Structure formats: C-alpha cells, structure tokens
Length: 89
Image 1 (cartoon, one colour):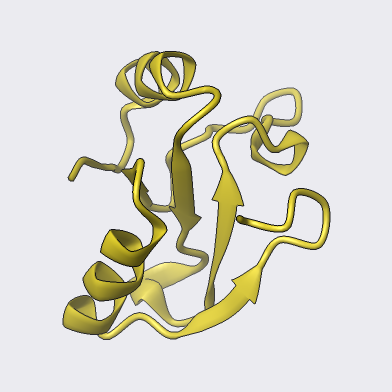
Image 2: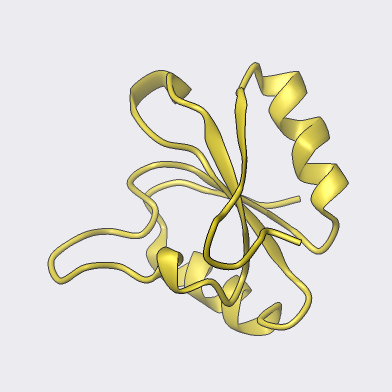
C-alpha cells in the first residue's frame, strides 16, 4: 500500500490509475497530530489550491478502505471519518 509524502507526481499517477476504485486517507498536520479523513480517489477535496502541494502531508492509498483503516491503527493515526463531499465509501 503506497503512502505518498512530498511526491506529488507519483501520487497523482496513482490517483489517475485508481480514479474509480481507489481510496485515499489524508493525514493532516505535523507528526500526524490531527485526525485523518477517508476520501474516494476522485474526491474534489483532494485537488490542490494554486501554489499548494498535494503531498506535503501524507496520503495513504489503497483500493480497499479497510486496509487504510488498518494502516491508520498501526501508525497511531486517528480517523475523523469519511469525507462529507464524497462519502469516502
């Protein structure tokens, strides 16, 4: 399961390849201090604003949302829940 950090090009390549089937766990803040949110790969909330980076904060990616939940548990990352825009499901 890939986790992208400071690698927008590889992240966007994965996202395009998994547009219909992928899920992304967006981990906010330094030291993974805030809760992560689950998104579908095609979610509009994952698009970057002008001048921003997409992977300044880690993005864990999988076609299986339960893999992302397991990763978060192992890494000590709390989950906020699914995105309000895409439902994360």
